[in-house]
Length: 98
Image (cartoon, rainbow, N blue to C red; front, side, top):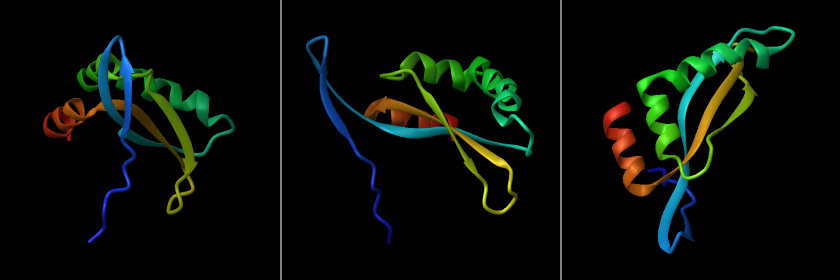
């Protein structure tokens, strides 16, 4: 059985103790192009305007970020949106949106 290697972080914000960690909230592929970042702008924007995107943007502890990597099977660019959410928000996200 594989154990989760999720790194939880404890910090105090506005006098409240918050326990949070990063989670991948969305992934998508972009076909190879000269400028994959420009090509990915539309799917990133569409996700941000969706119900799940608005919820994540509102509940994220820090502004979500994206990462790009080569997809090993298709040689396309794989983008992942990563957000730092509190434990209760991660549970809600997983139950409602995945």
